Every structure is written in C-alpha cells, then in structure tokens.
Length: 226
Image (cartoon, rainbow, N blue to C red; front, side):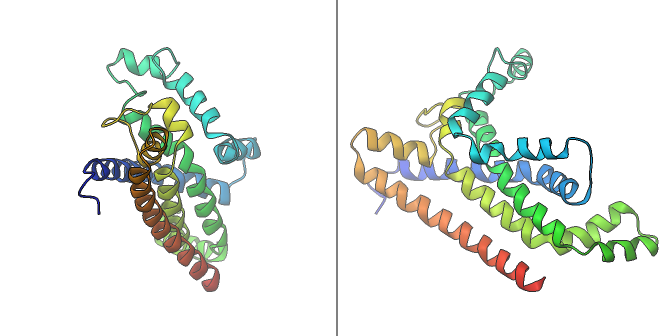
C-alpha cells in the first residue's frame, strides 16, 4: 500500500524514534516529580503543580512560543547553549524538546495517582525493619506503582507522537529534518495530496490506538487491584 510513497516510512520512523526518545528522557524526571507530588508537602507546591500541568490546557502554539523564546539563539537558555555549540531550535532537538514538554504532564498525572494509591503503611513497615528511603522507593513504592508509571509513559508517547502546535514553532516543518507525522499530514492536506495524508493518518491512528488501549488496560487493572 505504501510502496508508491517511500517517504511515509522515513517520516514514521523519525516520529516514532523521537517520540520514544522524549518519553525515555522525561521518564526519570516524571517519576521523581510524581513521587514528590504524591508524598511530600512543601511551600508553593500548588503553584509548581499548576505550572507543570499548564501545557495540557494552554494552546500548544503558546507553549511553543515560550519554548522558542527560551531556547532560541537569543533566549536565556538557547543563547547560552548556542555559545557552546549546541543549537536547539529548527532541528530534531527542537522536535524532541516540544514533544517532551507537551507530553510530560500526562506522565506526571498518571504516575502521581499511582504513587498516591500505594499504601503508606507498607512503607512504614519497611522503614521499621531498617530499610532506607531509597530502598523503600525502589523495592516497594515503584514496583507497586509500575502500572500507573507505564500507563503514563504510554500516554506521553502517544501525545508526543501527535504533537503539532509547539513543534511547528520550535522546530519548523522541514521535510527530512523536522517533519513529523502530524506536520506531514498538515503539509500534504495543504498541498492537496490527500492520499499521502490518509496514509499517514492511518499509521498515526494505529500507533496511537495501540498505546492508548494498553494504557487504559493497565489503568483498569490498577483500579481493580486497589
């Protein structure tokens, strides 16, 4: 079906690889922040939590504009990196950044809920038996919360795969360099190449459907187990 359009596979492979990379990148940070939100109290926690979840409700292009101003050549972070030979915007790193920022809240929400469901009593028992905080987290808390973490990671991957608004501002829509599935679909529709757009649409739906259905299955099992 796709033999007449080999670029489909290049776009798909690029999108999947960068989405996977963004998920792996945010996973350790997401686990740590989710645990802190579920287990600790600190000043301005609500403010921090609100800022983390803003990308869910803000227009993606608004988030993309913020990232562009921060990580562009003249931005406070991007300028510092550019002076050291690292450019973020309008290349694959910009795609990675946009995907990571837009998908991060979904990972945190799912993992935080899962950590909150872990019985504190089990952690206290382990502590009375002499287990350190680190050992408790890695041998009790995370193993009991793994379904929520994996479900959140799958949702984050699906969200990264479908990212459009922030990506087009931070990385542009450059064929062969920064063009993802969503950007390519938009581009082909604009050019009147509906056949190519539908091919990419089918691939996108299949991948996203698989990620979401597995995530929902894990969420239901987590609820049944609790």
